[in-house]
Image (cartoon, rainbow, N blue to C red):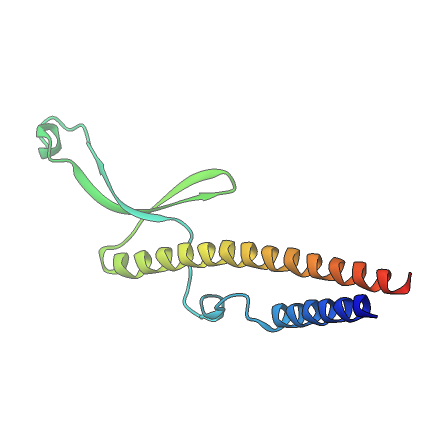
Length: 133
């Protein structure tokens, strides 16, 4: 009789934990729900020489262009960014990185949550099958 009461309390506690896990938010979804445009890649200054003997770059003052670089279908691509668009593109690439990091965290949390829920379900099964024997 006492053994049945202990099992019943354990079962009740496991069920409550399972319900709490099911109902608790996994992650803040704001980053996924935003309408902000995302741009894959990185923005950085590209410095290079033009190799004209009389140019300032021959004396060490390299030409600088701000570019966006991204890997598309396994190939690195470069795009020159107009000066007036640099801040906006930089914000969009940062938003893209935040989105990807949030996605990775979401997957990790969801996986951990699912594993914990499965352990609880297995524990419930074990207690319920012991009650019948």
